[in-house]
Every structure is written in C-alpha cells, then in structure tokens.
Image (cartoon, rainbow, N blue to C red; front, side):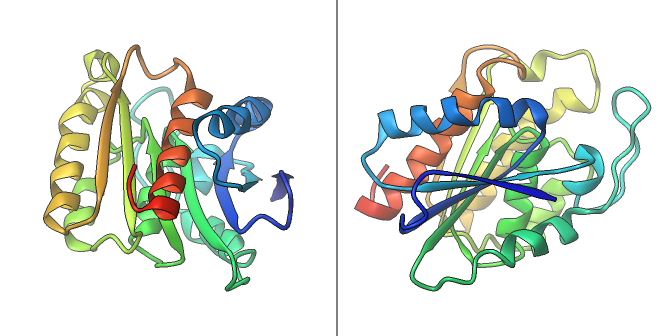
Length: 213
C-alpha cells in the first residue's frame, strides 16, 4: 500500500485518509481547503488502497450497484495505518469520503488511537453497519458526519437508505455522549468530495485544539 505525505513531518497533528487515484489527485486542494478553515498545523498521510471495495469493507457484503461485491480487508488496512501511528507526542485523526468515510467510522469503534473521525458522505447504508455502531461504542473523541442533500434520492433501494442511516448514526453517537456534527451539503454523492472531506478534517482539528467546532 503506497503512502503519501503532505505537509511538515514535524506537525503535531496527523490526518490519515484512505484514498483512491481520484481522491489522491485532489489531496493538494483538500489540504489547501483545510488550511483556509483552520490555523491548526497538520500533516496529511494518505494511504492509496489497491481495491476500494475490498480494502475498506469491514465485512463481506453483496454488490449493491454493478457486479462488484464488498470484501473484508478493512482490518488489514487499519493495521497498516496504526503501524504509522506510534508517536505518542502526535495527535492522529482519521477521515475519508464515501466508503473511506464508512471505514473511518468503523475504525473509530475498533481503536481509540484517533482523536477525531471525519466521515464525509460515508456509506452508512453498508449492510449491517448501523447495527454494528449500536453494539460497538465509538472510541474516537469527536465525530463529524456529512451528506449531500440529494444522496438519499437515488433509485437504488439500498443506497437510498443513506439519509435515514446517517440520522440514526448521529442519534446513536449522541446517546453515547460523543460530540457529533451532522452537516447537510448541497448536491449528490459526486459533488465536491475534496471540499466536503476538508470541512470534516477542519472541524475535528478545531475541536481538538480549541474544545469547540
């Protein structure tokens, strides 16, 4: 798995994100957007996954669009990330977009290594995830959620559940007393992925630094 770093290695805050080739092409823009929203210094560490559906899925699930099903490679991906998070003097945050956002939420229930979770347009429609979140308390200290206001209007019967699922996720996190922000963006799932993810990372950075969003 290739790892790319943007920013000063001396930064005390490290943002970690699983990306595909498209996300990677937007990383510089994403980091610039984060800097516009907060003066908290950070370094971005991006992990380029080889198989999106396999490497970011916490368990196997059938295809919901096209023919590509979902694997169970999230455990290996998380291990690779945690292997780079050994510096106790640094603060780590995990975020992502779409299935990478779902992965971040799942990982936040597995380890307490991440101070904040930034899940932009996360695939919380993923079969079984809402029940998983109910049964496994969030270990991250704060969670940012966002969704496009047209994402739940898809004709796909599974993916159209995303709106209700993310509202339920927010309620679950609220019940766990996890500081949570749910933001509704304009547009469908394929609009402004870098900007939406940047908003999430900026929010968790500000909250960790200043105690508020």
